Image 1: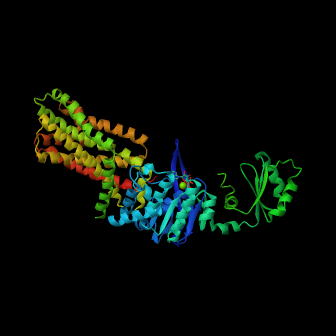
Image 2 (image 1 turned 30 degrees about the horizontal axis):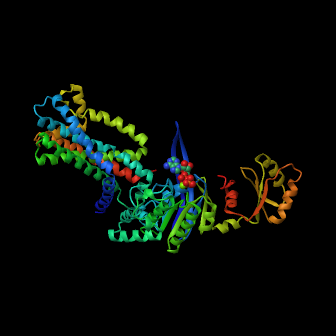
Length: 320
Length: 250
Ligand SMILES: Nc1ncnc2c1ncn2[C@@H]1O[C@H](COP(=O)(O)OP(=O)(O)OP(=O)(O)O)[C@@H](O)[C@H]1O
Ligand SMILES: [Mg+2]
């Protein structure tokens, strides 16, 4: 296990007007991350993903709990942790007035690497991230996607055992996102462990070997995307309807024997977990027929990570 | 050893950034020249000096201390770095924490010394004459002030994390300190209570020391006293500054 955490906790005191409030950002996170995998943290805004990453990257001290990262103890030996990890912050990390090459060389040198070797590594990183063309232009002239690639190149210039990428694809267009996925897979192919955070369901599904779903500072589910989806046996039927009609329909359907579980969608509609969608749909229609509930849509699909999220938290990630 | 190497790395980057901004370099040079050309002529009648040379001996040391004092404004730059994520990125590397501060502060000191040298040289044609050893001792005094002010400023900026909070704080603190330091005009004609207040102002000691040096009295008690006071304060503020770099939480 390259990362092992037990009961990691962090709360922040913030002041809203006169009142001092405590936000429990992370409340007892246990994680196991294996060497060489792409591990994903999936969760809505404010779930505590960044806070957990910042703790694991030694940027903020945990209030409680233990962790070993790449074989070093987070509390007792933060310096050793720093040497072995790379960290790419959510908000970017480059300075407007210098070039990608200058940033990369300085970054390598801050890890104690000599000048000549730092330059070699910068060249290699620029090529690997398709940045050679812009290497000597100031960072302020880069596009969002180019700049994000520089961030990531900076995070791995010292060839860490593990790299934390906080929302590496947020704000990228679909094509740049696909490129970024390829680059992240390439890191895994080189033997690096990659720990990413995301609130994109498709990203967690397609890119990650294993994920932890986080909500309100807690890990509510952990496993490979397929494992998690398999936990939900059968099919999912989503029935769209106006918000006002939802309670009535829910009451009617909840008592039906073919409905295993029922969740309300806040924006209007119901999600029904059933054994077999093909036989359930006619039954659903029959149940609602004559009740006066006006259906907007009915849709059958295999369980998605969003359904996993919904069953674990009672909310849909798409809505939040 | 690692600390020195890392300091050099940070220092190099900061110098590069300063030089890359020509407007900034221009302002840094033209500002002291304005003081010298436009303000100095007011000083001679104000202090009843008998010659230009005497006026400049009083005025130039005060001007140098004031410029050193202005190193206290460097904190604004680091808030921009904080926002860009540059500080956080440095903090996840094993780079020495003290070097993150010292590399930046040394850039500020070098900038100051260059400005000071320009002023000193420009004042010579106006009749200023002062021994090289005394000039270097003066630069030591203002170098310490600059080091102290820039660490305090970085530490304050990292704590407050916003220009909007930093600006009023600096202005409120700086104004009374500057006014009671006798920087632009000596406090010899000030009322007793103001002079007593100035005794508690380390910058007032610095101004007395640099004036003694420019008057050709390196043996004056003010000189060693100022060096001692400033040295102690500088060490304290650098320790505080380095700790905020090590800790700065978002
Ligand atoms: N320095 C801080 N001071 C006060 N509150 C904080 C601080 N950092 C985080 N929080 C709070 O902790 C909670 C978790 O924040 P965190 O940034 O970890 O969420 P996240 O999962 O990364 O969300 P996002 O997807 O929006 O990036 C939020 O409620 C946030 O407001
Ligand atoms: Mg986040």
